[in-house]
Amino acid sequence: MFSPGTEYRRTEIHLKYGGQSQGGISTPHGQSFIFLFSSPNGSLYGYRDGWSPDRSYYLFTGEGQRGDMEFVRGNKAIRDHLRTGKTLHLFEWIRPGWYRYVGEMKFDGFDIQDNVPDREGRARRAILFRLVPA
Image 1: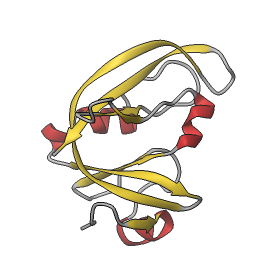
Image 2: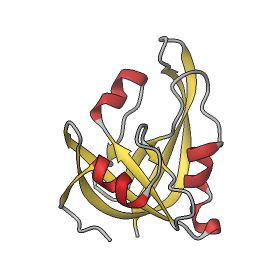
Image 3: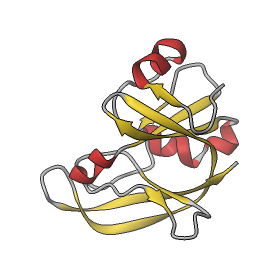
Image 4: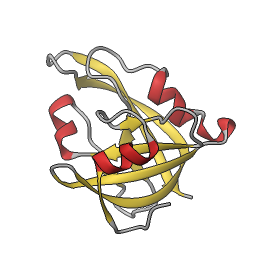
């Protein structure tokens, strides 16, 4: 479906496969996959995505810009993807509108981090997913 290391225009991905065109988690209706879009712009909302120092896992911050993050919508879809039979596909931002495909990933657990600022700067609880290459 995608080739690791290849750059894709996000709008073209959604034209072909559907899914939400904004936000980091896209769950195309009726499809057997979930798209994860990591962007440095997430740091404006307390998000910190990226590889662990030994590159054994990828930390991906859950969705939700205000208040505590919960296991609903996209966050639930990531957590439950193995049970629902959906694959996770990770993309990293490289320039406006363009993302590089990292590869297929699997959920490997999560951590809850306290005191992560939300969109208004208020402290909240954030979900940090640990993803490993599939």
